[in-house]
Image 1 (tube, one colour):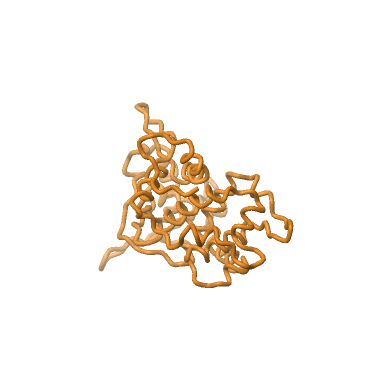
Image 2 (cartoon, helix red, strand yellow; image 1 turned 90 degrees about the vertical axis):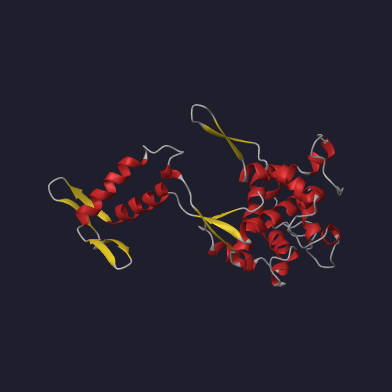
Length: 281
């Protein structure tokens, strides 16, 4: 069932049913937060579905594929719709999930603003770096380091270097002791937003695939079905790889035939953290 325009003022059960998959994922990846008077913060339902409806109604979704192409069963052994049917996924619900994930991926990777670490996160990284190099501590002799360590601060034409590992360890200890005292709303926990930029295509593939994998984590009844039945593959990774090609993120047809390229991307960016603010959501 394809909706021409979603209702934004009146609750429509049929429309909300079609958005079941995308709402579940939106609540996971883009929840809203409420700050109570006492300072406690808790997650509430995402506003992303409402944003999605408005973008869909005004034809502003950043996608380069059509529903007719999506449901067209290609003459190959393992096409997208056959895999969805074999796994038990509702095709129309998945269509709206695919629109959302594609739009969300574009908003996070195309001309998006970067956010820096907070001062607290930077300090935590410094503490971890120094502590990893510390071999032992003795109250009489102080800290013993595995390798020589140096702290350098510089501005144009000037710099200061601290080569004493004892000083560096003590500075780190003071920082660590202070970390838990910073308010959530203080400067210590504030991100800075930098200039807009576009990520590499491989990062776009990684994000798209990661979002789909998070969806399948929410629906283990799909994720647990990975065997072949009736000649149709139930490999979700192969399905994702085919979708990477179908949505136009890559022009490499090998993604439609095998998941080997996708596996390489997921290995390469296994510990990657996206540092951009989504333009749309």
